[in-house]
Length: 284
Image (cartoon, rainbow, N blue to C red):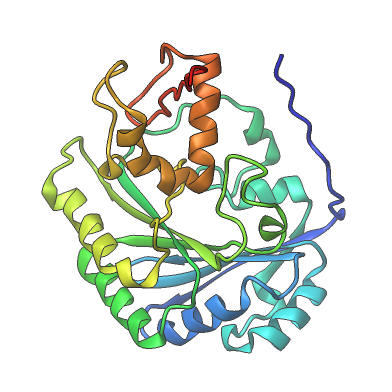
């Protein structure tokens, strides 16, 4: 039997959201300030960052009123120039729709409608940042996004995330990470050519000096087959899979492989980057 326990947390009746965009020119200073303060302003405030070839956009959810939010941001991040007119108060469930890519502007009833998502073609990669990237390097990163027509999303990764030990759950990317980066390249047809995926791979390689190391960590839900793949269901060894397994799960990978060895020793359930069974011999 498998059980799943969820601890609910209090959310106030009113939350506040904003989405503020600035042109990419001069965006370096804003991004630099964000990476120094976004993770430790207050646990009630979440501000992520989206970099496109022309804009830098700051998206926020705050567990409180607009007046409270403007006061906090004015004190901690005055460079953003946030005003009350930029903010919208709503219920938490309405904020889910507000921040949804496909549902923004609709009512909360859209959350229970079973709509097929439009077909999309894209490549995603990920990184974790443990030390703030130097401002001069941020300037180069913005140029890469512009030149390669690439989107980068950054989300702070401290707060409650850091209070949980990295060995407590399979997800290990806890204390010590300032934020996660998602690299995204999309296109309009099914031609996953070098012209499309090459851009994201080039930027990913250039980012190597500024992100986590040994291993260079990655988020398993941003499935990245560039990190390696299983050959087939029966022939991939633990030694092979550790190439991507340590990036996704760090020190938890061996324990997960041992669990797989108990519940699915024949590797019936598998995919290109599934965890292989590690069956330990009882003989000495």
